[in-house]
Length: 469
Ligand code: ADP
Image 1: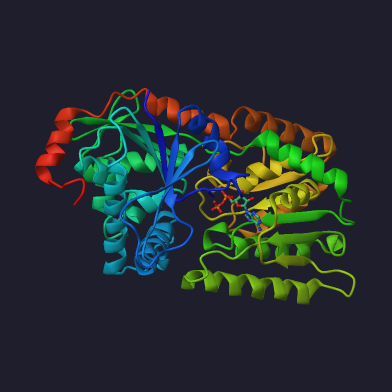
Image 2: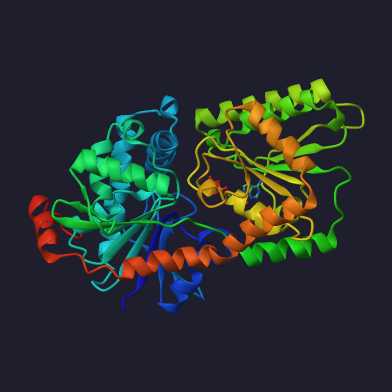
C-alpha cells in the first residue's frame, strides 16, 4: 500500500510542540504506520517562496511545508477562505466580501500546491485533503495526471443550495468537489445539502449505495462526525482537578474562538433573560466566557468583539454588585489542561452556535465531567454535534427565552438525571472518538478503486498542463 499524504492549510509543528488536541492526535497513528507525509502551509510567509516543498523528518512522520508570498497568503486565506467561503458556508451571506483578486489567489494557491505535490506522489498513494481552504486541489492534481485516490473532508458546515449560490464561483466549486474520490462531511444535514447541490449543479444522481453518479463516475459520499481524544481529555480534567480547588459558586462556561458563527451575543442575551427572570440566582452563579481572538484583520471579527464586550458590560452593570461579577470574560486562549479542569468544575456548559460543522467544545465539556456529579450541556440545535448528542439540553440560540429556560433547568436538574444524561453522552463519545473518525474515513478511502484511467485522460485532453509548468 502506498504512502498516506495529508494536506491542510496549516502543517503541524516540525518539533511536535502543540500536537495535543486537534487533527495531529487523530492522524498520528495512521501516518506513522504508513511512512506518512503531512503537507501544510509554513508558519510564516516568505517574500521569495521556493516553488517546491520543504521537507522535515519528525520521529513519527514527515512534514513538507509550502510557502506563500504575504500578499498571496492574505488574498487566499483572509480573503477568499475567510471572507467569502467561511461566512457563506456558515450561512452568513450578508458578511461575504467578494473581490476578484481573492478568488484568483485561491485558485493560484491550489494550482501551485498541486504542482508541488504532483512531483512527489505515487500512483498507489492516498491523499487526504482537509477543509475549505483547499477545495480545488483534487481538480488541479487530476489535471496534472495524478491517479492516487484523493479524499476530502469538510470540517465546517455545508449550507443549503440557495445559500451556497451566494458564492459567485459556486458552480466551479461544486465541480471541484466532484473531482474527489471520497467526500466526507460532519453530519447528515450537510450530506443532504451536498446531494442537492450536486443534483442541481452537475445533474448528479444518487445511487442506491448512497454515492453520487456524476458525469459517468461515482463519487463516494460519507458522514464522518469528527471527535476528540475522549479518554485523553478526560484524564487531563481528572489530573487538573487533583491540583485545583473548585469555584465557590456554580459556574456556567462558554469556550469559543471569538467568531460570529458561535452565537456569543445570543448566549449573553439568554443569560441576561435568565438573570432578570430568576433574581434568586443573582450572586449564586457566574458565567465564565473564554473567547480568544481570531482572524482579527477581518472586519466582521472586530464587530463581534465589540458586540460581545458591550453586552458583557451591560449585564455586569445591570446585575453586578461589589461582591459579584455576573460575566467574567477572558479574551485569550488558555492551555488545554486549564480548559479541561475549568470544564470539569462548571455546572453548565453553554454551546450556542448559530451554525457549526461539529463543535468540539461540546464534546470536550462532556469528556471532562466527573461522572459521579456531572454538569449539564446546553447545546444549540444548529451545532453538528446535536445530531449525536441528543441527551444534552437542545436549544434554539435565537430565542433568549429558550436559552434562559435551559439554564434554569440545568441548574436545578437532579443528580440522577444529570448522571443519566451524562452517561449516555459519554458512552457514545467513548466509542466514537477521534481515532474512530480517522479510521472510518481512511477505510472508505482505501476501499475505493483507483481513479479510472479514461477519466484522467479526459482531464488531460481538456487542460493539458505540465508538471513543472
Ligand atoms: P472551531 O473549530 O470553529 O474553533 P470547535 O469547537 O470545533 O470550533 O473547536 C474549537 C477548539 O479550540 C476546541 O478544541 C477548543 O478547546 C479550542 N479552544 C477554543 N477556545 C479556546 C481557548 N480560549 N483556549 C484554548 N483553546 C480554545
